[in-house]
Every structure is written in C-alpha cells, then in structure tokens.
Image (cartoon, rainbow, N blue to C red; front, side):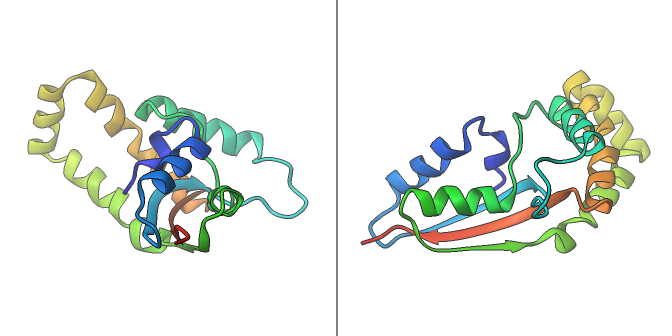
Length: 148
C-alpha cells in the first residue's frame, strides 16, 4: 500500500513481490502513478513532468510510472490475471481535507515542531491537489496472481 512510488526500480519491486508471494497468491499494489500516456504520446508534457518533479522532490520520491507500466511489468514476469483500477476519485478529496487540517492552529503548531522535512511535505500538498485536478496523478490499484 502506497509503496510503489518510493521504489526507484519498479520492475525489481514487482519481481520481489512475486518472489515472496505464495504459489497462486494474490498481489495487490496500491500506489501513486502518473496518468497513462495517450496512444500518440511519447511522454508526459513538459508542464506535467515539471509538476511531478516538484512533488518527487518534496516527498523524496524517484520517478513515477503509469498504471499501464505496472500492468506491462507484471505480465512480462509471468504474473496472471493482471488488472488495474483507478481509485483517484476516492482519494482526490483527501488532499484538500489534509490541507485544511494542516492550516489549523493545531496543525501549524505541529508542523513547526516536526521540522523542515514535514513542512516541505505540507507545502507540497497543493501540488498534489493540482496533479489530481489535472488528471495527471492517479491512485492506482493493480491486482495480479502468482502462478501455481
């Protein structure tokens, strides 16, 4: 749950999940992703890449991939019944709600006590809201099964 975005090598990440799964075991990946590319696109737009770079810098994250990238990885290493779902609509309201609580008197006091790393993350919440509003950020669920 929300680990894939922290992994610099997404293929190694999925391979390790498959390695430790029991035969016929189910693997669930719930993670932040960027949107899938459209058929004619070779990459995200420069503006989208800039926004993701700012978010990755604020949260100390490596580059993200798309839900389709996870599906391709899972299929390429022999995992079965690979499916992907977009849960963004359920997660998007979370970010403005967290911003409101962080900007309360109690929240601001807590941020001041927590230090620069936490403050930096709090300041990036607006970037996450922008990403979700633009359809750039996706909260993806990828399910698959290890073969018996």
